Amino acid sequence: RSLLTFSRWLPRRETADNAKGRQLRAVRVVGALLMLVAIVIGSADHASAQSTQYYLPWAATVSWRVSQGNSGTVSHFCSGSNTYNCYAYDFDLNVDQPIFASAPGTVVKVVSTVNAQWAGGGYGNYTIIRHADNTCTRYAHMKYGTVQNYAPNQIVDRGAYLGNVGNTGNTEPIGRGQHLHFAREDCSTGKSMPVSFVETGGGLANGSSYVSHNDPCAQDCNIRSMINGKLVAAEISRTGDGWGELRARKDGPAGSWETFRIEGDCRSAAGCAFKSVANDRYVSVEVSRTGDGYAQLRARQTGIGGWERFQLVGDCRSATGCAIKSLQNGCYTSAEIGWTGDRYGTLRARQCGGIGGWERFQIG
Image 1: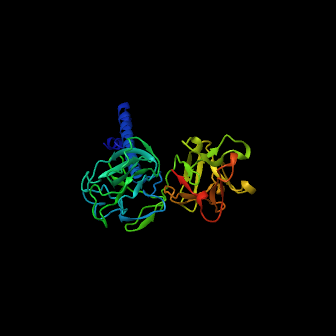
Image 2 (image 1 turned 90 degrees about the horizontal axis):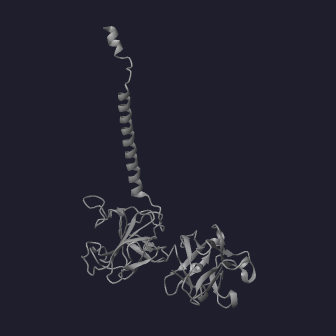
Image 3 (image 1 turned 120 degrees about the vertical axis):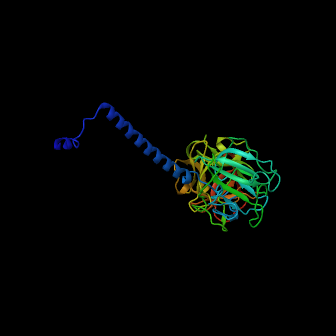
C-alpha cells in the first residue's frame, strides 16, 4: 500500500492525446493574452495618439477666447449618459468670422442646409475632415450660405476656408449664442478625443484667449507679390549660382515652379521653411553674397539650417498681405521690381527696416 501511495507522486507517462490537448490549451491562453494586450495598447493609442499637427481654426495673428472647454458645464460633459463632447471646445468668435481647417485632410461630410438656431440636430451646419492620424475634426454651427460644399473625399489643406461662424443648431448662450464648436473626434463614432494644439503644445484653458498660428496652407502654397501681382517662381532651369532663384514674375496659373510647401510654425521663434515642389529643395537666404546678390532667395538646399528659416508677419490672407522675414539676418524679403530682364522680381531678404509695398505678399 505504501508503494501504491508513493507511486501516485511519480510522473506519469504522457500520451500523445494528452500532450496535444495541453499544447492546444496553452496556445489558447497565449492567444487570449496577446489579444488583451493588443486591445489595451490599441485603446490607449486611440485615445491619445496624435501624429498630426493641429492649429487653432481661425486666421493667424487673431485672438479668440475659449467660452467652453473640456469637461464643460453646458454641453461638454465628461460624465453621465452623453460624454461625446467631453474634449470639445467652443470658441467665442463673432458671427461671420472665417473658419479655417486645423490641419490637412480629406473631407468626410459637409452639412450646409440648416438656416436657423435650434435646428439641424444640434451641430447645425458643419464640416468633418479626416486627417493623417486617422482621426477627424468637426467645425460646427456655421452660418447658412457661407459653408463651402466640398465633395466627400476632397483633399483640403491646412488653412482651407470652410465657412463663417454662425448661430445654427443648438447654440447655448455661453456669453453669446453664436460660437465655433471644434472637436477632434473618433471618425467612426463621432466621440471627441483629446487634442494638442501647435500654439500651446497642449490643450486650452476655459476662459482664456489664444492667438492662432494658422497660416493659409502647408502642402501646396502659392506666393504672390502684392507690388506687381505676380506669382513667385523657382527658376530651376537656370544653372550655376542662378539655379533655383526665386522671382515674382509669373501671371498664372500656378505650376510646380510656383508651388511651395511650408514646414514648421511660421509664427514661432524657430520659424518655418519653404520647400519648392519643382526641385524638392528648401529656400535659402544667400547672406554670404555681396552687392546685388546679397540675401537672394534660392531653392537649393536639401536640409534646414539657419539660412532656411523664416517668419511670417501679418495676415497672409488679407488685402494688406504679410511679410516674409529671414531669421538669419532679421530682414524682410523684397521683390526687386526695379530690376529688368532676367532679374526682374528677384526676391531678396534685404529690407531691415519697415515693411513697404515691395515686402508684402499673399500666400494661399
